[in-house]
Amino acid sequence: MTQTGDQAGQPNFLCLVFLLFWLMGLPSACYANYVICVCAESLDEAWKPWVAYRQEQGYEVAIVRPDGSAAEIREAIKKAAISRSLQGVVLLGDTPSYADGKLAPRLKSHVPTFYSQAKVNVLFGSEPELASDFPYGDLNGDGVPDLPVGRIPVTSSEQLTRYVQRVIAYERKYPAAVGKRDIHFVAGVGGFGPAVDGVLTTVTRKFISQGIPGSFRVTMTQASWQSPFCPDPFAFGKHTVDRMNEGGLFWIYMGHGLRDQLDQVFVPGVKPISIMRQDNLKDVAVRGLPPICVFLACYVGAFDSVKPCIGEQLVLLEDGPIAVLAASRVSMPYAMSVMGDGMLRQCFRLREEILGNVIANAKRSLVVPSAADRTPNRMLLDSLAGKLSPVPKMLIEEREEHALMFNLLGDPLLRVNYPRGVKLNCAATASNGSNLLVRFEAPVKGKAVLELAAERGVQRFTPLKRESFDREMAESYNDEYRRANDAVWSSTSLDICQPGTVEAEIAVERVKPGFQTVRLYLQSDQQVYIGSKRVYVSK
Image (cartoon, rainbow, N blue to C red):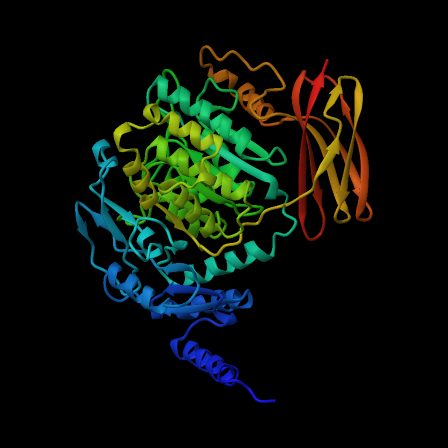
């Protein structure tokens, strides 16, 4: 059979295309997940285990040396990433310190950062320049993140070796960690005025109750001595560190911050009490799953400080959190709340697995929200922007500055150690004095706990009337703090011998009428599973 000219030429054309692709260096399957590490030669040996580990996961790793300015390094990254599917940039090393408008001398191991002129927060005491690694992930310079960036602010190969070991352990050695279902909040006092503080309290409660599924356990430690969530104020710093040491998926601080300390607890008639200072960090020793720390506060992530900031110190502790997201300069309620809402959506609605993507996507929605980003929470924040922002006419600029100043200290490729989900089925209503039948499909055998818990923000008891502070009430305050964070009305333990359908009853006794949450915790040797279902309990 005779071929036409087109048919005869087709194989040769395909070969030519393939040859051109190969010559141009376009990606084959092995370049599907390309990552660039900016790393001084002195850190190569300590970094090798991380490279090998990520290669096992399918990443192709390239090294760029931190020669030249930040802009020149970004150009080197752009050239290395031509026609490749770049998945992230890892910056290995501290940056030269910046103080009084001057940069300190640069070491060979330093990776410089970018500085942008502030427009909004400079009006409220911030430095004119914003320290930011954001531009390393904004390759076309349009102010919108193209890919995730993280800085591991080590100053020695020994520090890097320890951090690499911790990253690998986080992803491999905590498959059944109890803390996977725990999220810890620490809140300072607002101090923005009664109107803004009231709005912030309302918005925070709404986000915690609606943004985080009911299957997760949430604790609150609040720096207001009149709150049931405030333990003995003189031991507040200890409780703050204790929550971190318990381990968990996230540990989140909301409030004022400085480079070397967080906010204070103000108690009538006594000197202000620190929530966390740098000298408290010696007590940080996480026992369970190392949490990802998020600081919605000023300066905690000022990684260009003369002395290491709290964020840098925490992430480099041998038994500290696995990553820190924090601001390098003065931050403000509106833009921080919008970014926080975006992160909640990425984690608990879209279940994004890569930490750097969680942050980059949240920043993208902060700067240029899409229709999908306009959630009820986001619409609420935008409607309240006039009250939450000190400069209502510059909301876009405020959001852009916060995308710049919030930086990830840690590995942007870190896989968030989420628990897996289980769907629960039960009646929509129950009455006191009855048993509620719950059904679910157990994916594995293991130990399970079925709980009936109060909805977030609803106390199971009548709190003390803290009208005046009494130091003799310290133990009472601590007891109430524990009770305020214990939402469980009743529970039952289950031994699940094999995967399959499980039916169990849980007692409904002495429960306040109203909506409650049925939640499941199932632990196997290899994974943690959680689930929840909302029910209405009548008298």
